[in-house]
Image 1 (cartoon, rainbow, N blue to C red):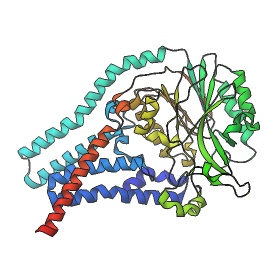
Image 2: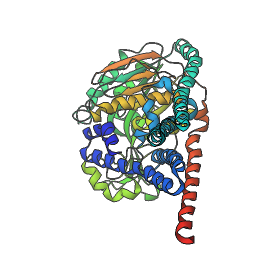
Image 3: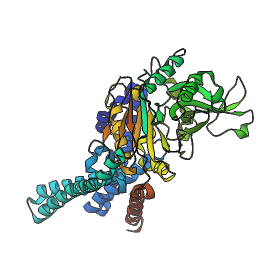
Image 4: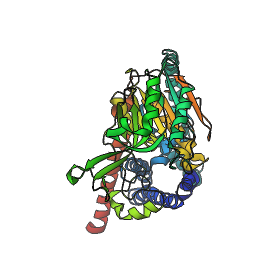
Length: 478
């Protein structure tokens, strides 16, 4: 588990070496829990019970790792097919849990074949296991190809069914040496506007800027009068037919009454008021109105501290995190553009690896997914490539077009089958444009969410109850 974590997520060290070491070690230890439970189950209930229990324990582990306070689902097994979307078009039914289940069943069968051969040679059991493995390996791929064949005509038609387009901007601002440096804010905003206007035409309905594109903290109730935002409002008034979806840094002031504050609020000793800070996506309109969504899936250690680790606040602050935590939204928020044509889901960075989380945007009416991110923290490593490819799985699960704006790359468009269009190279300033049709179909996965994990969780609980009963009888009744 440690080797796997190091080889796949070593790039975290570009952001923080201490944080990377802690994350890799902790994740490796957590990944051992399903194997430990499998070992105990196998020893107590037999070989096949152990093998089957491993499948249920691992998927339950992935489910918990998606939903608890130290969530880090980057290495969910089903993510492995992010670069082979044609194999997993059935994610529209199962989500990535189906991919995890596929991998686990194949590995159990492969190990059974090896065990049978070493123990008994080429027996009937060996041949049955071999045949089963071939079927389990190939059947999902054939099913996926069939789904894609039926889906492609509609996807191709959606490309040509609209004249409305979306513009995505990649400003390429160094997050370490420039982005948050005082005195550079105005130049950064002017660059974003200039790149946008290189692509805007009369059919442009939505412009997307990346996470924290406007790196000036602003009180949300005063955004219309903030001086730094004046060029942005001027830009929108020059193009009154479009809306701007941008990552920003924002705050809310709750005044002097502690009762009005939230559990994530901070206290200003100098001013004496309570306030929240947010990593925010904002939809800005030419009339100076704004819609806000606050990132809810925060990065552990850097953007939030689990409640049981709050005493480590000063330690995390030393390597780039916060001493408290960012505020967050409890519900997904769907934006609407000025023309009420696009209803984008404002997905911020890390949130794009949470398939089940994103389904609620679509159930609330999102007809396009927008991902705003800043992957520049990781440098020119595999990290930003992995992150972009995971978005392809979200497109398949929801059957929505994706407009992805990444500060330093990879900005791109992704169609509902997971195909990538106009990917922009790393460390390049660029803007891209594409006609995108809003889609309204609800897939089985969107309607029902991660139902597969919930079913398998029940099987895990049953295994644990049987195991506990067996151990109890053996120790106390024999």
